[in-house]
Image (cartoon, rainbow, N blue to C red; front, side, top):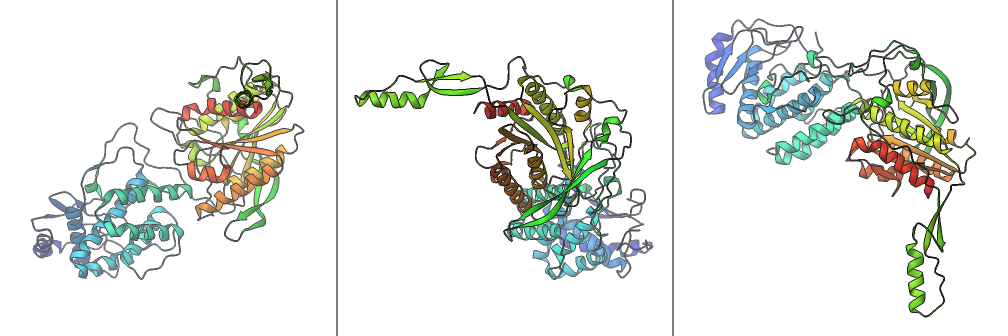
Length: 562
């Protein structure tokens, strides 16, 4: 039994109350609404909820009535809510392409929107909704059902105060949109943004175990047209809210896509490193704030089938040396024109001054070896597919890193491929998938191809540790190439700008030490935060995910030829 949910009371007296309830529905709606008692509308182990259609409202016999609320009051609220949907909602919207959590949150906001519209016409009904919402409140939980129950009450009761950042943000956004309650698209976009926030904090959602928290509200099947197919998501999503300070050793779990089962292998911490974090609100570094843990990638020992990189449907011409060498300007002969020299020559000619005709660029073999560190984002979001029939971002960034590593090994430069994820500031996991000087053999391919993705993206701490690794290299040219699919985030940070500013500060620290940092971001909305972190001309937004390997190799060519 959930918090706020009482035992089921007998609704056997419902038929006697039907005439007055029908008059209420007709008076509010302006037409007949068939009220049909009987039956059960609950999934196994869940309380029943009313079911609404354009012409009928099914009131189940086992409708749960919370302690402290009379049956007539609950039914009256149920009818008023159903009327609000019939008057102000668009039924049977397609749910194709929406995740179950997104559907549930859009439905919750729609419930609040139509009730707000109904209260404009009948303000005295507010108490009808307030009583069951208060009894359904789950104030202590941090799961999806608990947060939506808190949001439901916050949107109805102006005096309710909730200190959870997500509830506060959702309430603020709703009130901003409340000036135009007819704009359903605005509320839909708001729901998509809020679901993204829940995903970043890894809030648990299990579709088979979720039910609308308020007992008077219908199950929202009225709002949606579901197109069931073999591609539908499984009924249970394995997303857990992690502990704030997890143990040193963790057990690898089965991947959410179910493609490759893994054997449970404990991770081994090689070293722990404390790094500061920049607090932009106080303009100060919090010393020893983050713990970066160098971990041994022990999953390579698990006997599992890994798809070889060569089997992935992409290719790169590696017959040419990627390192383009140095470009020597103002040469008497060369491969291309030096435009600056040409302009100066023409100006001198027009001014009747002597000018040397050294107007060409000649390419020379590179004499400055480079040390390149490719830093992979191994957060949970990289497990998502980037489109129908496309691989995950995790697969693409692994493939890009391996292709570049093969080419750089052939060029004589030094390369390392590292990955990171974070589970609060207490555990930023850092994996040396391929280290400088290590052979790129079958074992190295296996380690990189087997790397799992989980948790969050605390980029600043990972950049500081990657910089420390790179400063040990003797080569003059040192560069970190970051591959990511979104802005930095972590479950213990509720201000999105905080980790963006920290990553920017970590990047400036790296550049002051002689390390270049460039970013490749597969996110069409990345322009603002990517420019803030990496700076102008030091980031690239990759619109076509499949082009990531070519873009990464092109970035390496540009760095070494500059």
